[in-house]
Amino acid sequence: MNDVSVSPFAGGAAYVQGRFVPMAQANISILDWGFTRSDVTYDVVHVKHGGFFRLGDHLDRFAGSMLKRRLAPAEDRVRIEEILHRCVALAGLRDAYVAMLCARGRPRVGGSRKLSDCENHFMAYAIPWIDVLTPEVQERGGHLWIASVPRVPDASFDPTVKNYMWGDLTTGLMEAQDEGFDTAVLCDAQGLLTEGPGFNVFVVKDGKVSTPAHGSLGGITKRSVLELCAMEGIAAAVEDIPRAALEDADEVFLATTAGGVMPISRVGRRIMGNDRPGPLSTRLKDVYWRKHTEGWHSTPVRYELATV
Amino acid sequence: MNDVSVSPFAGGAAYVQGRFVPMAQANISILDWGFTRSDVTYDVVHVKHGGFFRLGDHLDRFAGSMLKRRLAPAEDRVRIEEILHRCVALAGLRDAYVAMLCARGRPRVGGSRKLSDCENHFMAYAIPWIDVLTPEVQERGGHLWIASVPRVPDASFDPTVKNYMWGDLTTGLMEAQDEGFDTAVLCDAQGLLTEGPGFNVFVVKDGKVSTPAHGSLGGITKRSVLELCAMEGIAAAVEDIPRAALEDADEVFLATTAGGVMPISRVGRRIMGNDRPGPLSTRLKDVYWRKHTEGWHSTPVRYELATV
Image (cartoon, rainbow over all chains, first blue to last red; front, top):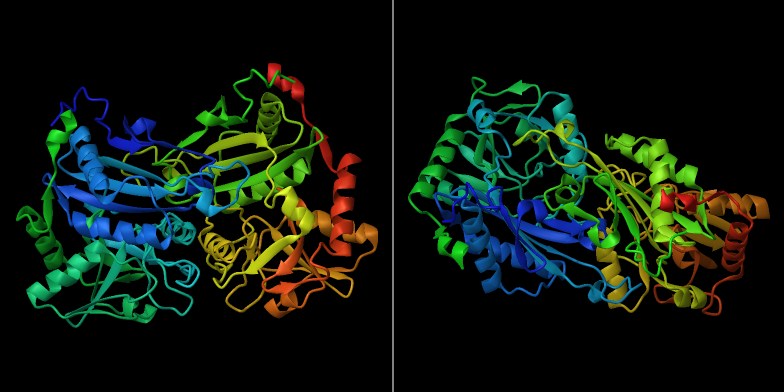
């Protein structure tokens, strides 16, 4: 590992336009269609205790997102994986938030408006760990607002393609922050629960855990939670969840790469349990992090790449 | 006007992070929420014959968009206007595509997820004229595909806030380009006509011009067309337009800052008229550009700002 106290990569390391650069130089042209049309897909994998968590699953999902949006960068999967290792190694981080992106780029031919004329380009970066909810909020239980704005329908944009088009989620977040809440969850136009800004949502009722079947990302932390439920003998389902079921839940928790399993103590004006994280949520959170220390789904970071 | 043959601004001039820079240096951080959440609004005004077209209207709309998204940059309206003039002057352009943007930025406080903690920032640039449809295509009449993907509903994101969240429009464009068409128009889930990637749409039936009332930007070229219809004694309406009315139109044309009035000769598999721009579309296009030469709604560019 490099000496982060003097490294220009101490704030994070990025790979942009084929070069490794400090985060402060990780930019995209304001003419890139990845910006001007949000024509970009991405994925985020975390590093904990010096190991990537479910790296292969994240690379699979990223490849699937690129395929669906017809984005094809110059770098192949082996090279992408190596770049991610090297970003973490350069940044010298044992715990990290690691993003990979592919943007549409701009047409090679001046004046063209053709998607197929664009030079797609891959970017990546590793920065210190980020929590969607701060550790303090996770400890007391998050306060979740049910937004009035309906989630963009799956038919208009496939939510399993991880994307930056957060307009509806940002509106939900504005409502939540206006009301003094930590974050928001959105329902679709039919009143079914979908997801929030950067996370999947789970409800617990009578000992059974469930999470929405539609309108949301195919979360990898969500998948981990479902696997842990199977291991722990907890009933779990992926199904349509009406708004009323969220409001009437015994417990609620969120699942995301950037924070893991995050218990909720309030949904709208309703205070659950004793205004603290519920027992099943806490148990899943504890198991999730314990499994990390045991090396579950872990790929050790190749820190030696920092000096290559 | 500066000597563009040697100027570093020959490819265009931008204002980013408070400084005027050549286009090649006009970048945004890949950590900016303007990128990672597409939390940004923008506007585009054109310069023709050395004058801005409807500059005040564009500045009004941009201010409205920022207000709706709670974006507040350091620069006030007078300063923004001066920056736009200077970008065009530095680029030395008589005809130009001039964009203004305000992005959310990043939280001043590390770890914050609060929108109100972000440092919003204004950007602008002037580049050589861009046409949504090339001049050759405009001459023969554009071929317009009716996309199968439904437009994001107004309830999920207000389409009168000019935005970069083009996922559904890009999907429509993919369909169009696969089918050998020039561009696409989207309908909403109810089958009503909305807009396409970067333009409003008009249909002409029995001498009457109409354009959608919902699901689309409050276009300034659209407003110009409606004003020209009034001047020319052409009946015009802003109303709901079912998909069938588009398919059954006598003529169709598009309206956008980046191209003006652009006649369409084919809608899906249907060839209109004699496979050439229709008479009313051509008349409106001609009047639109003739009025430009007469200085209609024009604000002369302050080219002297290039040397300030």
